[in-house]
Image 1 (cartoon, rainbow, N blue to C red):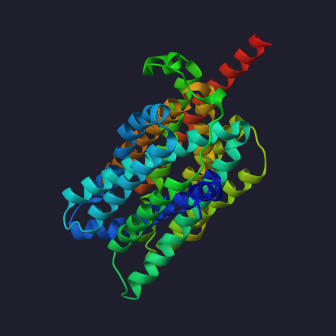
Image 2: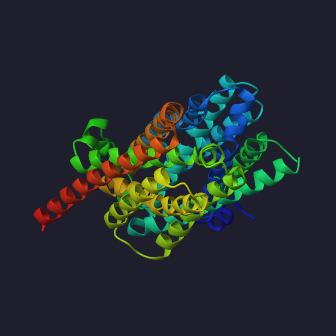
Image 3: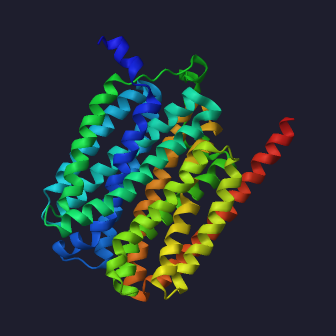
Length: 394
C-alpha cells in the first residue's frame, strides 16, 4: 500500500477514538490502583492526592506549550511527539519503586496525553467546524469505555495473581507507542480559511481580554478539578467510609458508565453547548451532595453514575467553545483550556486528600458540590456575555 493510500485509509476521526480509549484506560486503571500504590509507597491520603496530582500537573505546561506550537508546526507532528512522551512516562511509572520516580513518570504521562487531546480537539475544530463537538463526544465516549473496562480488567488480573498495579502503566505505555507511530500515517487536512497566519498569532493576555473566555477558563479549571478530585477517591470512600471494599471497583466503573452513557448520547444528539454545560453542573452539584450525606452503598453507587452522567460531556463542550472563540488560533485557545484543566486536575486531588485526612471524604464531597455551584455561576455569566455580543452583532 502506498503512503498516499495509507493516509486516505486513516483519517483523524478513525484514529482519535483509539487514542482516547487508551487514555481512558490509563485514567480508570490509575484510579483503581492508587490505594494499592500508596500502600507500596507508604504514603497517606495526602500522598495519594499528590501521586494523582502529578499526572495532572503535566496538563498545566504541556498543552500551553504544545498548543501554540501546533499552530506553527502542525497538529499531527505535535500528536506524534506528545504521544511518544506519554509512552515514556508510562514506562517510567511502571518500573518505579518509590514515590519520586513515579511522580516524574506520571508527570511525563500527563504532559504527553494532555497535549495529544488538545491537539486532536483543535484539529477536529479546524477540519469539521460545527460538527467537531460530535466527533469530540465520540472520542470522549471511547475514553469513558476505556475507564470502565480498566478497573474491572485490572482488578480481575490482580485478584487472579496475573499482575499487579504496574500492569496498567506497562500496557498503556505500549499502546501509546503503537498509536503514536500510526499517527504518522493519519490524514489531517485543514481548510485554508482555518490556517493561522503570522499576523493572527496572539499573546496569552489577548485570549483573556475576552470576559467569556476567562469565565469559561475558570469553569474548565473547576470542571476538571471536580472530575479528578472525585474520581480518584471513590474507591477509598467505598473501602474506608462505607466499609464496602467489595464494591470499590464497581464504584469506579459506575462513575465511568455514567460518563460513557451521556458522552454517547451527546455524540448522536445535537445540543446547545451552554445548555449542556449549565444543566450538567447543576446535576453534578446535587449528586455530589448526595454522596456527602448518603450512608447507603447502593445509593452512593447511583450517585457515582449520576455524577459521571452530569460531568461526562462537559469537557468536550468547554473545549469546543474555546476553539470557536478564536478559530484562527484554535491550537492556542484549546491549549490554554487544557492547561486550565491540568491546574484543576493537579490541585483538586490534593485538596480532596487534605480534606479527607482532616475532616473525612463526606466533607470533601460537600466542598466539591460547592465548587460545582461556583462553576455553574461562571458558565451562566459567560453565556450571558456571548448572548449580548450576538445581539449586538445582529
